[in-house]
Amino acid sequence: MAKTKKYSLNNSYFKIASYSYGNPELPKEPIDIINFRKERWELPYSAEPTGERIYEMICEYQKRNTSYKYLDQFFTPPKVADQFQRICNMYWNRSNVLEIGCGSWMLTKRVKVHGKFDIVELDQKMIEICKLQDIQGDFINENFKNFNQTYYDVVFWNPPYEPLQEVLEKTLERLNPWWYAFFILPTGYIQKERPKRIQEIMSNFYIIYTEKSCDEFLRTKANTEIVVLQKK
Image 1 (tube, one colour):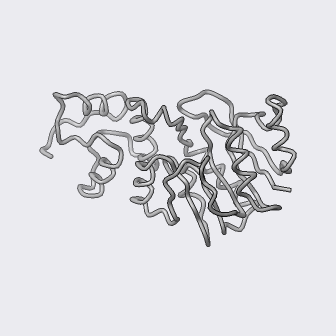
Image 2 (cartoon, rainbow, N blue to C red):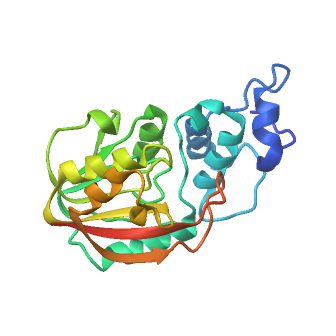
């Protein structure tokens, strides 16, 4: 790419790159931007240097790409991912693990698994991005609702906000007795009395630990908490 003006990531780059009259060499997809940086050791846009460039880039892309919104993707803020890692370290041995919905891999890269690690993700683009970051695990491109392959000692994820009851159902189904599940959920969700099915599911778990999330998600201002459950 010839040297030219670099547009700011925030509110400018993806807007300009998507226009038909824009520079055709500007990478328009997150995975193309990651490959661009690997090849040229620079970003195609201007941005403040941080340790979470991919997270910031994907969140900005999401503003301009409705398909990411249709998938109900809520990417985990870095501070919350660090908090999640600290809490996970308190309870598990990191083997025979299932992550559902790796998203922008904020949780995936912080959780070091020694042993079997399956990652179920509906969005093939997110899988490709994770693979470029040398995430070690077996990726399964499938809707979590249809995933029935095996059982696990640990299940973790930051689930979409819509099918939360289905999230709990699947965790109950795939988790071995006496082992742990880790979630980021809207505050108080596991105490809800309606629908009745939520408490029916929760009767199969011990609530081991909860902690208020230390940062908010970009797409929602909902209060969230990190929850640790143990299957009875």
